[in-house]
Image (cartoon, rainbow, N blue to C red):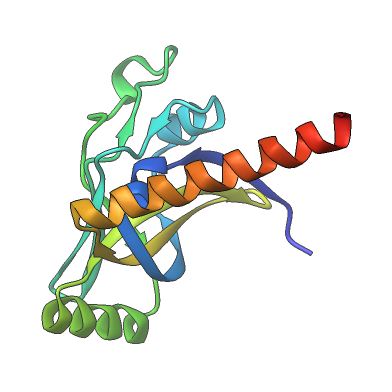
Length: 153
């Protein structure tokens, strides 16, 4: 059983997209970036993945510079390569090109001692979909509140 420890999650992805499938990928980091990740100084909010020449990259992921890293720190917004099997990358590339899906990072976590990223094959939500989700959450909250009141009274 692998030991999982979540570092960062992209809550905006669940709000803005329908997540059809999710994949696990390794991520290529340098030493000071790993130390910042261990401190939880990562932001996935506006990040996305792109496939260029058979390789998959994550763009817009912010890893804050390590305080004691001095000259070894890298650009916090640099494009980082993800590590996946070639066959998986090619299948994702075909899906993204044909049907208009997006690849969005969902979460960053440690699996044992390795940093992994979960990317989702996502379809964008329209405004009415977001409103519908908010209405469902609100109704569920109201039902739970009413049940709680009944149990008390």
